[in-house]
Amino acid sequence: MSLIVLTSASGSPGVTTTALGLALTWPRPVLLVEADPTGGSAVAAGYLRGQLVPPEAMLDLAFAQQGGDLLETLSQVSITLPGSQAAFVAGVRSHEQANSLVPLWEPLATALRLLEDTGQDVIVDAGRLGLAGSPGPLLEQADLALLCTRTDLVSLAGARSWAATLTDRFERAGAAANLGLLLVGAGEPFTAREVTAVLGLPVVAAVAWDPTAAAVFSHGAPPPKPGIGQRMAGRSGIDDTALVRSLRSARSAITATIRDNTDQLHVSESGGAP
Image 1 (cartoon, rainbow, N blue to C red):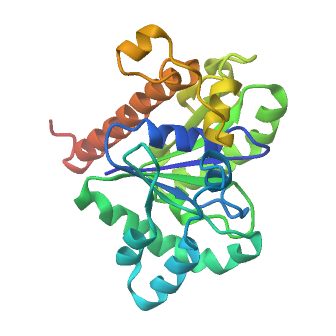
Image 2 (tube, rainbow, N blue to C red):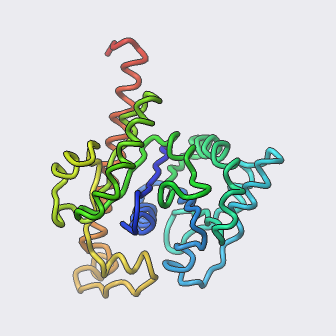
């Protein structure tokens, strides 16, 4: 089981769309946790088009944490996203509830790690950094924390100070390898190498800037109609879009990075022995 947390420094670079897209294309059972303290579930309102009202999952988990029933309640408040093997835990409905969740984040991180026995990976949408009630402990305990950003100058300027802050925080915890960048629209205009030079963090993965396909995840827009070849192969129209192809590549890069980090940790713990 891997705990993967996506966050952003400013604006709307596509954290929720990317987290949801990764979950829906993940090859193993996966739990998508909406930990954005902004309020108002973007997944429920967008991808699910308001047709499915999720439970007050985060408040239920906060109460369960006080009673010691967090892991059991986590299973109860998870819903399956239609047409997938991805489970989903919805975020708070109002930003006014965010501060009440602060005591939840650390025990929730521990509970999510206990899902290893079930073979589930976990993807967390942590929203924007610096907001009241932000899930800092989830970010800090992640197997891989990804700062998501566009590659234009305005986005990079907004991400620069947070990249430095996170780098310092992870280095002091001895977990520098667990932090990286996820680019949305690499090369538009700056390349991964140029972004790394500005932000001082490695680019782990990138997803395509593909507004039409992204709208399927972010707003529940109808997917593109499949061509004849796709229908014959039993594939949907969105399967071969630039966004979904890049999500598959990002998934491979993310899992490879976590695997490499784990291998390096084992080598370090064994004193460098093979």
